[in-house]
Image 1: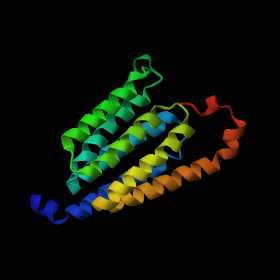
Image 2: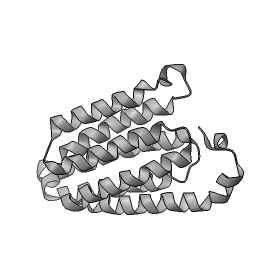
Image 3: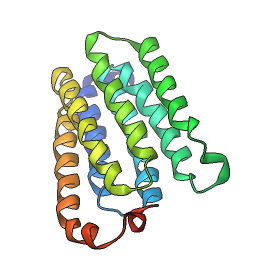
Amino acid sequence: MYEFFTQYREIIAQALGFIAMGIAVAMYQFKKHRTILILLSLCSFVWSLHFAALGLFTPVGLNMLNVFRGIAYSFRDRKWAQNNIIPAVFVVLCAGSVILTWENYLSIFPFIGSVFATIGNWQKNTRVLKYLTIPVCACWFVYNTINGSIAGMCNEILAFTSIVIYLVRTRKEAKNIPEAAEKV
């Protein structure tokens, strides 16, 4: 089994990345915040496997935190999950994860992306979430390009495209509907 994984590590890693990418692109077509966050947790778990197969541990740690962040945020309608300290805690945990798994200066890109994602995913307005995801895509695209994650590069291009499609597709709707209608 070890020989199989070693021999096909790159293919396995990219396959896992493409599975995660499919989840990521699909999740931005949903309106409900909870649905997006639950899919984001699943997506983050699969990305962790992808980056582990590539031997890149900063994104493994950050994506595993994203799993828990997505789950916690998806329960924001519950009293225990409404405290505004929660995103700050996740930013601190992300910083700690990056410090523990520091690879080189490139580790700053997934960290910055994770900070934007932490703040964006906390927003109740899904349009704001999607706008704040644009710099997330940019940071991860740079990191993935330099580290040879083909699936990661494709993911960021497709996620960005999916977000733009959603924003264009719903722009008339957003102008006619009060901001509260797009929440949770």
